[in-house]
Amino acid sequence: MAEMELYDFFKGIIDSEEGPIVLCNLDYRVIYENPAAENYYAPVSPLTGRLLSTVMNDEQMSKVVMSVEWFKEDKKNNKVFALHDEKHNMDMYILAIRNTKGELLGFYGRREDRTPDSGKEFDLD
Image (cartoon, rainbow, N blue to C red; front, side):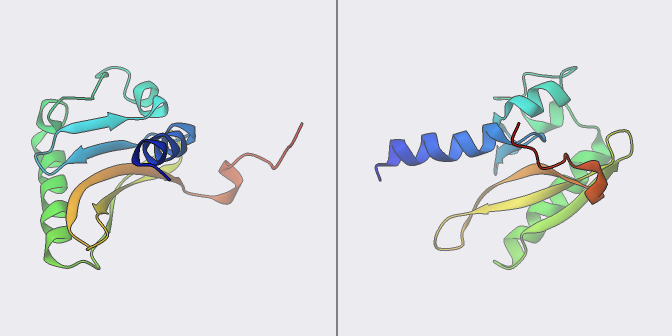
């Protein structure tokens, strides 16, 4: 599969997620936000191209920096709980993005529903 096809494939996966996903490089710059993130973070969107420090307070930014530094310590360090969004009943996580050698390329934020009953029913209609 060509590199461009892989890009479209992976972008399609990220864009199809119902929860917000924000991808960042190691300079703490947002390199991509999926459509759900554009909606979720509407008051400060668009995020793409912006430094996280322009949309986060000092405490939030400190947690992100500590998470990235922890990711750098060991290839096995890849996921940190960030916060619980009570309004949407979901947990937000910061996760490492690594290449095939395990080198840290960046990180991303994503959500996970807290309870199974908060998910949608399986329905093909």
